[in-house]
Image (tube, rainbow, N blue to C red):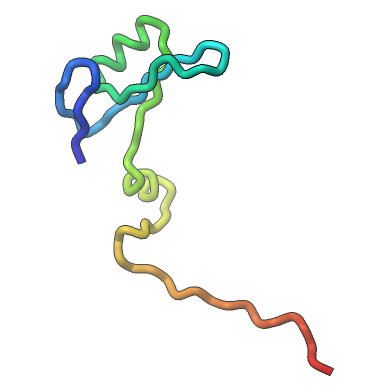
Length: 83
C-alpha cells in the first residue's frame, strides 16, 4: 500500500510518523516520506518508521488474520463438577 507524504506529496511505501508535543498537547502528527523524515530528524523532531501489520507479523513470525487462514477457537473444558 502506498502513502502520500503530508509534506511534499510524494508517494511512498515506507512512511515515517513525525510527532511533536508541548505539555501533552499534540502539535504535529503526520506521515512523511523517508527524505522528509531525514529532514525532520536533522531538525530534532522525533520520527518513527511505520511498518505494515503484515510486515510486522512476518518479522515476529506470526500469522496475520488477513491471510484468510483463521484457526478454530478451542474451548477449555469446564472446571465445575456436578454432584
